[in-house]
Length: 157
Image 1 (spheres, rainbow, N blue to C red):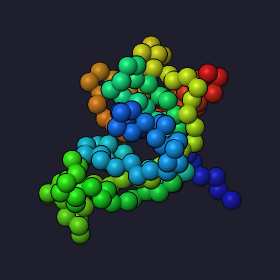
Image 2: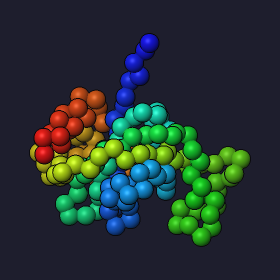
Image 3: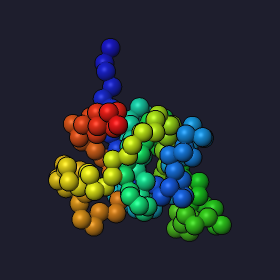
Image 4: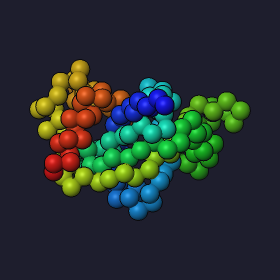
């Protein structure tokens, strides 16, 4: 029996738009509204069982607040076809959609977050893309060794 390799990701959300508490209450959600091709491509490479750090962005302080699991992949983002949605894309076609999403499941909320400041003081931009100056991606991979370090730190908190 082969053991499936788990990949780790960081996925950002503004807490006033969708927070870790929202996910905890709903248990599962579509991670939709991604309109950046690089973030979309990262999402396309996710596999069922992968883990993602839930990151609260555009708040004070921003940081990693929880953990979720990828439970469905390769889903079509329905909002690209909804003209009343801010995520509507008139160039996206039903038979050739541009935008995907994944379904995530709540795993845990950490007692204490790891702030962006702490992450910047601990990791270089080569180790953790999040701390790279000017990085605005909402989804990014996390190297396994860094992810395991983060999990250890967050479990201690």
